[in-house]
Image (cartoon, rainbow, N blue to C red):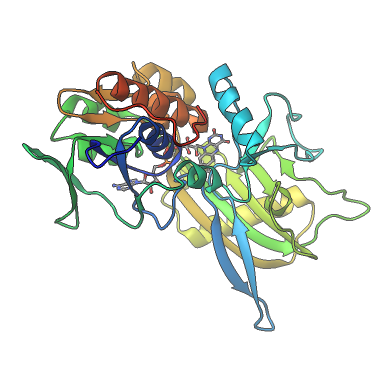
Length: 358
Ligand SMILES: Cc1cc2nc3c(=O)[nH]c(=O)nc-3n(C[C@H](O)[C@H](O)[C@H](O)COP(=O)(O)OP(=O)(O)OC[C@H]3O[C@@H](n4cnc5c(N)ncnc54)[C@H](O)[C@@H]3O)c2cc1C
């Protein structure tokens, strides 16, 4: 049970790692306070919402899952978390109709997606907890009264007994540098893979000659994944329109990392048209560059010797996909291991007043 005297802990980052860690620590009696620099929670499990305007001037709402489209459970522990979240209505199994041209059939394990949008899972984990969005933490200071967090050169909050850094390694390094130089160095050395994503609204492409499909894994060309985004579970299709998210391959994204967005958009639209087998009518399109999209799975296990970092002497921890073995599952596993380590080294009241998915 959280009491007025419960120790305060700051969680920096409200993606899968930060949200999971916050929920587990709150369940264990910590007074958590979450910070995220973005407007909402979810991190790379994200959905972009916008309005586009047609030729007659009418506005149309659109949403695109332009980060992680889905995830799988490989470990028994994460499978159990997923099963419980699915039972709670937070996750739905995604069984897309595969494009015939895909180089691989849809295999196992199952693909899961939060509904009605990607951040929904993190929103649920954080329900009832204090979350301050739009707040980029730029420095951590520590003195006899605990940890103080700074943004824009001013203190945003203070008096924390501990801090958890749950942000991608390149950004984490700057916060860790003054307190755990070795962690910062390892974070800086962590390779992250980039990814360009195309978001587009076209006319309906399915016809008697070209049956509908929801997911393509092209065997060649710039695109790795082509997703009919409005056909994912819980999304809202609009008559006569198709919403696409197309992810470029890592190689193509690396080669075009600094290319102008307009050039990338034109190239990815051409690749999508090729995948569709015809030039669609483009109602709307844009691209997003993920400079740090994902962790190479091999690198995650070889660079990291642990799934998380925790320095009990100063009350500083770190978690995230780069430490936990990549992907949404890695972020969750890292957060869970860190929360267990923090609880093992602290004398906080245990409570089960919030439902735990772990
Ligand atoms: C295009 C794409 C496709 C992907 N596909 C898959 C897939 O198929 N399967 C899979 O399992 N995974 C996939 N992933 C990876 C998956 O999304 C991540 O591994 C996982 O979401 C990482 O969670 P995290 O909490 O560690 O980090 P993040 O989700 O990055 O969360 C970190 C949070 O910290 C915030 N933040 C950063 N710096 C600061 C700061 N200084 N102050 C405050 N807040 C800060 C950010 O705004 C963010 O919300 C994909 C990712 C992308 C981008």
